[in-house]
Amino acid sequence: MSTTTDEAKSGQHAGHHPTPRDYVQVFFVLFVLTAMEVGASFIDVGPLFLPLLLVLMTIKFVLVAGWFMHLKYDIATYTQFMVGGLVLAMVLYGVVLLVFSDAVRV
Amino acid sequence: MSTAAHENTLGVDHRKLAMWVFLGSEFLFFGAFISTFLLYFRETNGGPGVELFDIAFTSISSFILLMSSLTMVLAHNAHAQRDMRRLRIWLLATAFLGMVFIGGQVFEFTTFYNEGLALTSSPMSSSFYVLTGLHGAHVTIGIVLLLSTYALTKTGKIRPDQDVKTEMIGLYWHFVDIIWVLIFTVVYLIPYDVVVFGL
Image (cartoon, rainbow over all chains, first blue to last red; front, side):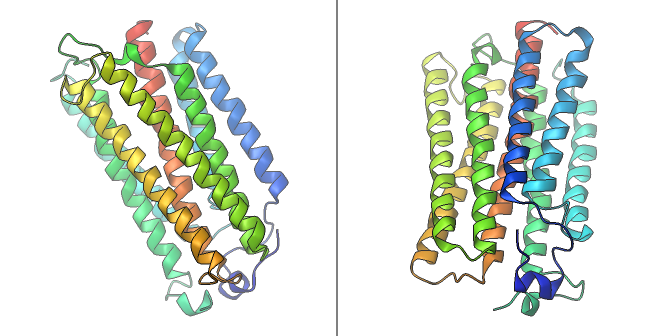
């Protein structure tokens, strides 16, 4: 993929840029990971079920954010804002779930 | 106007920075509703609950939304290469896939409602409809943005050198996809297995 004049001016996208072929490959990986998630829901994988699903979900999350949203190729500031919001949400709602889970018998 | 004209003191495009701040805050927004569902998914007031979920159907919806992320990134790629014809084709493809996803959600909601899962039936149903409904509203806004972008490129109001505009709409669209990645696993797959298979 070519680097645009505007991008070159602001230095937004430095170095290698993915091609449409790369995007299609990422999509197929996402497709397979989703199929694995669904498969794990119907095949008895025992105590691995929860960690397996969470790992697959995290990989899918990173693939979409890194390649499709270009965080892998953009400057770190954008990643920091996204991770900042994500971490804040995980801490806040992690505490909420811990505090209130007994109250609603989950 | 060039991207350089939109730089701030951090040396980044302030439009993109604003979009990322907004998306970061959206994690807090959706986190509230996902947590609420996790707290209440067993609270069905004796009515139907997550066992109504059709995992096969929702999986197809997930594939469609993932595919729309691919068409969106291809739209941005086309714009970055100044190929406006290809940009418009991918924008329409993305909007179409988004509409298919929303159609699937309407079908799912209708089926659940007919099975007795109404908005106010139980804490589980309320938290489920509000969460997935708000996600659907985000997808709908995305479709409007995509079609507006299509019209603006057609009338020449978005020029070939303004690919940052397509990139920003792409960021929003991919974020909606990312939220669905979370919802599909945390709201559909895990609670379904917990309730149906007793995991």
